[in-house]
Amino acid sequence: PAASRKRKSTEAALPEEPAVDLDDINVEDMPMNKNCDQVRRKITRFLDSGAMTKTALAKEIGVSLKSLNGFMGEHGTFKGSGFAAYHAVWEYFKKREVAGLKLPIKRARKGAAPVAVTEDGAGGTTAANKTAHTAAASGAVDISDVHLEGEETDSVPVYDTCDEVRRKINAHLKKPGVTQAQFGRDVLAQLHANKPSQIQGTQIARFRGMHGANIGAKHLVFYGAYVFFEKIRIKEGKPKSAKRLEMEKLWGPEGFDRDHDHRTGYFVHESEHITSDQYGKVHIY
Image (cartoon, rainbow, N blue to C red; front, side, top):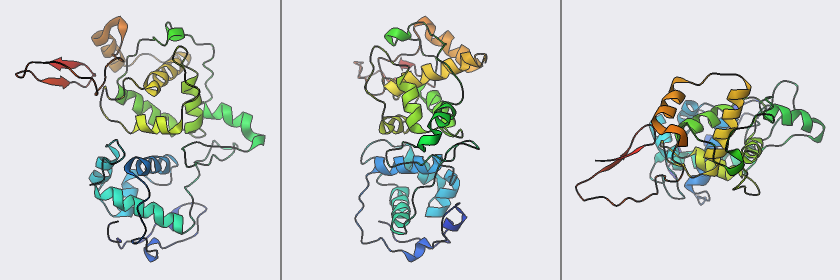
């Protein structure tokens, strides 16, 4: 790992944690036992808990926000290993582990049970508060009576890019009482023709870690999350945004292309170039 960075620990500022000076803990001789994707998932869970902002975390581990954003923008077991943020944030979480500091708890709404963020990104509540928590975790919006044309065959036209759906997911998971585990169940409930046994926290984290208008277009989380948020929009009686109307105009009745993504190959002449725009449309020129 990178050399230990001398900085004043902010651990005492985190609620319900003892004051610990992480600089007194040496982990330089310990093997790095987390790959890039595992560290990114841990960062996501940590930030989702509200313990720190991304800017504060970058300052805490002694790297620039650009380095942290660059690392978070990569996807793959070894992608991003060259960023200083990878070594620095691994060191930070390892020191917390040695100090006996668990990942902070994501709090539910006032009066609901606390939701602990677990290693796989799931959350849990006490049995006595399970019913109340379930309602809170779904955002207190009952969409069971909302039906979209084509949902039985998983063919609801999509009018959001992958990045827009990721933005909505990130905003949704920041709501009090919402856990990644419950969100996975909400996404699963929107799938019918191609329904897996479950949507795991790692699948959601993997999709959230991608960047690009059409990157992740084939992912089940992309489609399921879009349908989920569209039902909430309809239930709440909210109008379509200007961006949504623009997407409908550009993509037509079939909606966003979910059959091709960043991994799709194209046969073109050596003089031609391929680009993808902000709406996820591929252009050959």
